[in-house]
Length: 67
Image (cartoon, rainbow, N blue to C red; front, top):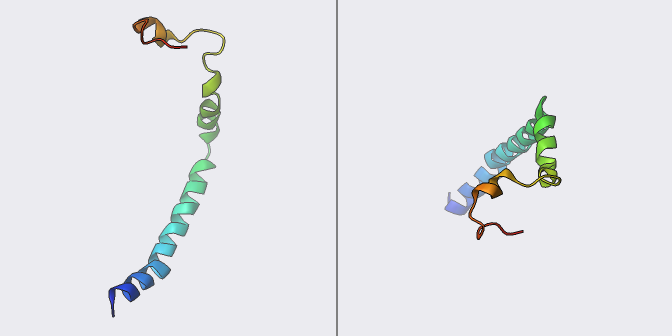
């Protein structure tokens, strides 16, 4: 059996099974209980310092602060 046929057989069987299981695992990880808090926090990152300045900017050198 040549290398191409061996790799093709592996990709057609075990790698396909691995990729399907990985895909299902990612889907289950996203919809797991308790994930909505983390997803809500990630979605609101851009609004975190909208009304008040970032506390980290006060500690930086004024040359480093760019707005």
